[in-house]
Length: 585
Image (tube, rainbow, N blue to C red; front, side):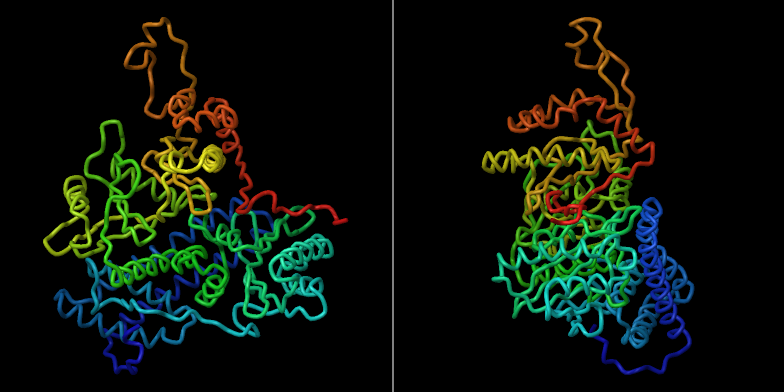
């Protein structure tokens, strides 16, 4: 923050009023955010899963609503003269710094201010005078474990006693079904990992004080310590009528990365100092971007701020150019990437192919549906940006031609810059159609199997992808298949799954058009066999393992489950890591 050392100002009433409006708006936003987080423990213990989903949806809307409320109020206080309005706003920002400078959620307050400012002044690109635009390094708070966001548990007497202390200090201790059983199960798994990796040695275990809640699970998140080494330890906990129990022990960076991945819904974490929690998580996941860690604990707007800063900082230290992304060219979206930055940019085209019966408004609605919905590890989180500006010479000329031809409504191109007026960003993935052709037969078959699993998981989450071609799916660096093309995505309740009627004659089947009436939302799963057979490995796998996907009975069964209010279990870790419920022998 460039103005952080500015001394307190003698402010006039107009400046003070604007600064207080910003401050009070931010405080109200974060207090409401934390209030919803506070409900998560009760929702978990009382198994109020539907209400927890409602809370998650409500929380997603708080930031935007409070920002727009402050924007509307600020417009009434600012003068009509633009130069005078900017001068007054700069003074209000300096006063705002004094009001938020000692807060433990300072970084979130900066983002709230920027969100208001960009909308209030219709900022295109960067405005160094009005915004907080520090693109250098920032510190993530740390402490010694005696206070703050985590507690340190030395391993003095025995690992078993340390694990017991961890459970006894947990807010869920009084609700646990069988602490003795869980202590032994967890100790056994940790000791096996220590014997393999650290010759059985350990100094202590750090555990974050706040519990992480998501869907039907609660998670204790921590790290094992020995000398200068650390390793994740995450304890997923479930609840049934008899009480709370530990369901798994996650002890690798890979398992932790999947837990905090960009294909999962956001955790509910009750913390007053989110930067400290993110700093702790970053120590476990050094490769994962800070933007994704903030987003994973619910602060998606600040995640966008960190992504924005990371992108511009990267461009200052690189010379790669934007180019069209690998994979089949989209009929609805233009997709491009900066090869040295692990993100793709997606713009809605001005005109769609005739086969695409949708509109830009419908595409936006579907992206919002994904943002609001449980992504169950199979949908990529997309961040929405407006008015991003880049130097034109950072764009490949073929890409410039494509954007000018296909996206003139959402892109402005001049001799000096390219302005993206509305764009989505997603993590860059390996397109599944390319992966199946380019990888070894073993990897291709594993991906084809997970391709079917992804379709089934989406159906269990009440999602019909619409277009099931492999080109619309991607493979993460962990090998998971996920869906990323949302222009035909729909809820299962919006689809009429039908069997293909029997034809009256061979000539009927040879017609270019169906010989029977077809409604706009009719889908015929039998037809999936036609395009779920290429490449060959897909046809083999879907014939052997996932044949039910091509039957109307499968999809109608899924619809009935959702009609009955079923909320299936989705585990963000492999089932083989689950612990036995019986007392260990």
